Length: 255
Image 1 (cartoon, one colour):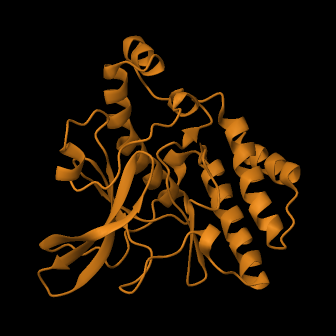
Image 2: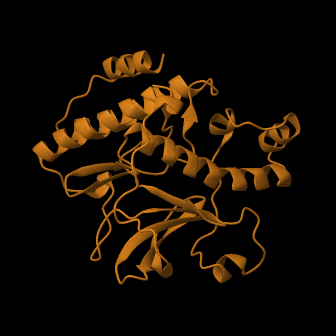
């Protein structure tokens, strides 16, 4: 289904329409370009909810800037060429991104959170199991926190799943990937390290590099790699997956 035809899902009931204050509680995880912080949103009515704030580090920070902004690590750049191929950029901006000029790096820094919020929203509207996208911030994205007051949801790579749980996790994951592909989207970096497992629920995270079938010629290859990556993890946990059959089914949904 084209994303414009998807029926939008309602916002979660915990997202209240009343005044609030956000209080940072600390770092949850770090990644190549960004770090995730836990935020407590306290509403005027007395209720509160935990949120995850994914903040992107400056691409070219000055001395001491990262520490002053609350970041624990420096940025490790990933190769963005396969993912940025479908971005709507002018020819000048595209050349800057492809040649890794300072202007190009600044563009990537601005585009990454924009892409993440847009893809999270598309995934949510398509019915995929992803954190609810709350809002864009000055340096990132605020989204649903997966976990509770005692601990965050573990990554699938670190979760201890029974055979039955692993089977359920695969079926849930396949359902979410089908929903994404039907909406014209490929995650593009799927692995057991960007999947969460919480109270029997499989959740996909980290979507800034997600691509569209209609704008990115690498989308089929990225989809095949996604399926092969997660299938290898599930095979080690007793769930055999026919990668080529799943890939063929997903391609049929996409086209």
